[in-house]
Amino acid sequence: MMWRSTGQLLTYTRILFHTKRSCTGTQIKNLSVKPFREMPGPSSLANMIKYSGRSMDNFHRDIVDGFDKYGPLYKFILPGFKMVLTCDPKHIEHVFRNEDNPAMRGIDSSFAKYFASKGMKEGISGEDESWYTHRSTTAPNMLQPHRNQGYLPGLSEIADDSVASLKEGRNSNLLPFLQLWATESIFYVMFGHRTGTNFKTPDKKYLEFTEAVYGAFESEAKLAIGFPLHRYIKTPELRNFYRALDVISKFTLDFMEKIKNSPSSLPAGYECLFEKFKREEKLTDDEIIQVAITLLAGGVDTSATMLVSTLFMLSKSQRAQEKLFEEINSVLPNGQTPNYDSLNKLPFLKATINEVFRTSPVTVGTTRQLSKPIVLGGYEIPAGMIITLSTGFKSTQMETQTYGDVENFRPERWLRGNKDFHPFAVLPFGFGPRMCVGRRIAVMELSLFLVRFLQKYKVEENNLPEDQLGWHFGIVQRPDRPCNLYLSAR
Image (tube, rainbow, N blue to C red):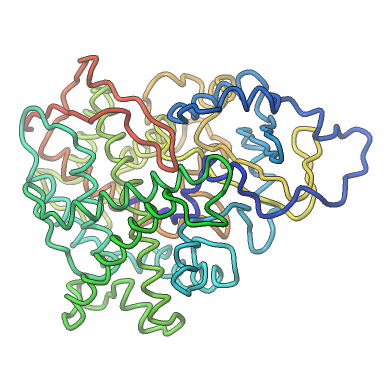
């Protein structure tokens, strides 16, 4: 699981027509600063014609094309809607350094709307006062490394079981399989118990859960595009979203009921997230359930997609795969089980994960809405403007300027001693108060799976045209076809 909160997963698709503040405010009095109206970008009419009735599957490419045509900062306007997009790390840093307290994304959340329909506050996915309470409770329990070490044995066991269900030769359509791995991992971290997924022949209820997560984010993306009629009435798509969240909620509540009298299976001295929340008594029982549902839903597709991307890129770069295996084998010879210390001795593994974040970003980035005007690239950005911080997709020039040989999959670029990149060039987990609370757990999960997988298998190069992955734009980027990999035993 990537453990990105649903709020952080809300990328550009979540923005169209969904601003929470009007673009008004004090103007910056500086003759050298150009007004917003002079900022380059496609016209409102051009956007209306281009996107009328068109699928948004390739919108990530449109974003890159926009950066290539207009530069690293441009505006996107429609009748009654204005937004700025930037891929310049300096701009992104400037926005983050000047964000409000609390930071505002300026976008609606269907998750928050769902919880409101149940009589709850918006919580960690929203922007009301409950966000701080939920965030201040979850962050310390998930971002401090020493608190996460207790999850490692169980997550390693889950990785072992999932890898054991793979086979030599062709393994077809791996995304649903990896969604089950992510689900099992998420629930273990949250509740200290495994759900009992059989990776080879999963029970229907587990597939329904992962399909509901998939469906929830599909509906979330559709709700984000077009006139927000669902703000006023319960539209068919909003009903679809609510049904998906109902499935996720029921699965979670049923599991909690099943384990309520069972002690956690974590090592002595460690607590799962649920136990920590209960002991600290900062959240009510309903709020704990709300946090659990939000984090569980937010962790499945992102982690599974990231792992699909990594395995696919390793199949395309046999050199990088072999170098990674050699590092793993030198630290953990003869298939030894990794522990917390050994994972910290695998710099090329961390570099590989960073390189996949660069080549196959899971999301476009994030958004901010500032209460005061700001200047970016010599242009005045009015208060209340939505600013999309595209850390995932950049212009060709910006990519080359930042990384050099952008076409090559080269994890070495992230190793210490190589070129230092701008710290805001790649931010897969965000930055600041709304940074992903589970980033350390996410990297631990990915690392454990990759170690156990590469100790057993080699991913063979596959040049069949029908197996070359592309990506569809969405709240979470998705493969445009089934991921089929060919494995050989080590």
